[in-house]
Length: 176
Image 1 (cartoon, rainbow, N blue to C red):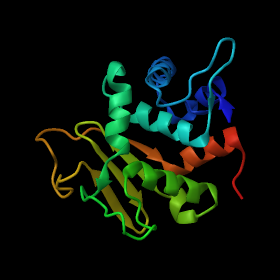
Image 2: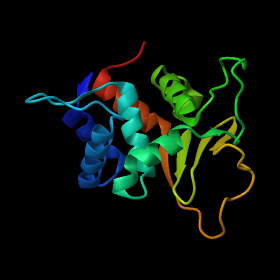
Image 3: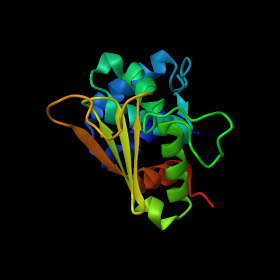
Image 4: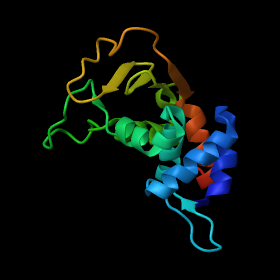
């Protein structure tokens, strides 16, 4: 567990506006998406909470919708396809599960995971994981991952997985 202030200072290398990041953290805390502190006690976040915060910062279109956007993006499905309950455990059922697994592999030293990037598309709910071995697209249920959801520009924030892994290692210590 790490104090929110330590997490906020550690995610500065991602290049997001620190003031906006604090507002998003407060919004997530108020919504119960990340822990809130108590009287005279700062919130303490786990590595999963920190990853939730990073996803929310990268995807929030409007500050007041940060918790809603986090829920939408974290529950995206591989290629827009619902994964059945009896599927192998190696197939992550949601984008957040896949992202958490990828970051965990990068923290463990997997070179392919460390060379991967994550694109958080803001024009419509989509997360794209670019690995050296291929691309995984996560979309809403029933969405065609082969096509853009809307006409016009596709705006995305790309974050290297190694940077997320290094941030988590800095705050929570190395994973063996």
